[in-house]
Length: 214
Image (cartoon, helix red, strand yellow):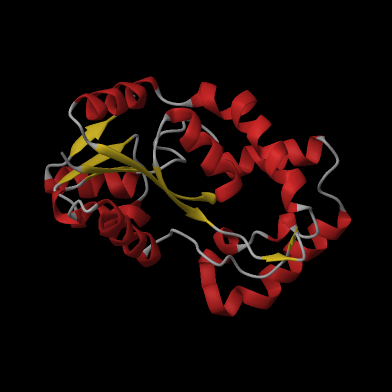
């Protein structure tokens, strides 16, 4: 029995990222307006020096002013209608095989928690670490996220999941698609690269890691 860490965008989910699709959904439904656009631009200007090229990933200000309770319900419907059908068939097969082996699944993603939580629940994934956005008085704020599983923080949260489950990270499996997940993949016993970009594909070949192309 081992811990199995699953990335979402590009790994479980094929095609466009979950947040990209969610932003389009919010735009189509008139929930992102000039206030959110201004907040997003202001975040980029304010935090560019702090985060450098990663500032785009840290910017969740497109949610500014939206009510948490309402958006949580909208996100649940969005996951059911727009995301579950995009899960890679090969990953459905892998998750089933891991369950059969008695492994413990965990979703570890930089996507926002209001998307990741209902998706994890629908897929029967019991453990979750996702991006936690800042909230003020029941509404999302433009502040940086309180938790963002990306780069070194993603590895730290993987260790946290290992502690939570009592399953060593050094014996875990991890599925990921991005070169930014390299520290995590190097920390586990069974790294699996899923439909990788060029950088991670080269790293996987050099290390002899399994690569899933489907």
